[in-house]
Length: 108
Image (cartoon, rainbow, N blue to C red):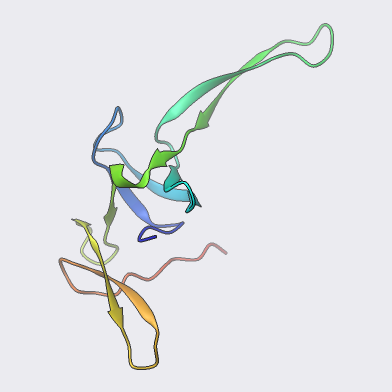
């Protein structure tokens, strides 16, 4: 997949078109991702014990990968992803606009 977790993306279609956010989870088999603060839906939770209240919580719902575009961390533009093969056999993602390497920022 061309988009990985911790990438900054922008929605290009749907009800949240134009919003930006960070990818929190990637479902590579389904071709979907979860972006924080985007595509929020309400879920109703039933009470477990008698006398407890039920709840409504907001949860981020998965989005199809084709509905988002990557934002390059170097040039801060909406871009497509290309690949560059290096001599030692490594495959790096590059920005199609500025030709810079897109490094994945790892959470600490």
